[in-house]
Length: 157
Image 1 (cartoon, helix red, strand yellow):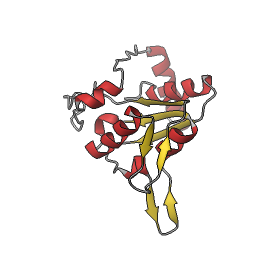
Image 2 (spheres, helix red, strand yellow):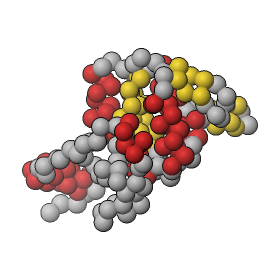
Image 3 (cartoon, helix red, strand yellow):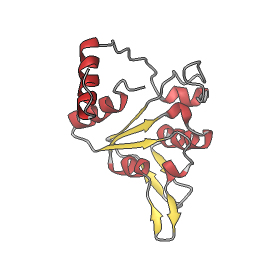
C-alpha cells in the first residue's frame, strides 16, 4: 500500500496521451463495471466509457473484488466486445483501451498482511501479467514528509 501503483498508471496514461479512468473494486458490486439505473436514468460506468472511447482503465484493488465483478471484467477483456447486461448494449472495444489492475497481493488470496483478499481464478490471472514492484524506503524523504505534517499541525520537535 502507498507505493505509487495508481500514480504510475496515471503517469502512463499521460505519457500515452490517453484519458485516465479509475475504479476502486474493494467491496464493489457489478455496477462498478456495468453502470446502474437510477431515478434520473442510466449512469454509465467509467469502465464502459474507457472500453468504448479508449483510455487507460486502472482497476484498483482487484484482489478485493467480488467474483461477479471480476467475471464481467474478464468477459470484456477476453473479447473485442462487451455485452453490458445492465443496459443491454454491446460495446466494441476501442483500439486504445488499456487496462491495468492493481492490488496488494499477487492475486493468490489472503496473506498475513492483507487478509481480506480474494484468490483470482486461472482465467482472471491469464488476463494480466503479474509482477511485483519493490520500493526502497528513503529515510530522508520520509523524515521530510513527517516534518512537513508536523509543521502544518503546529508541532515542533
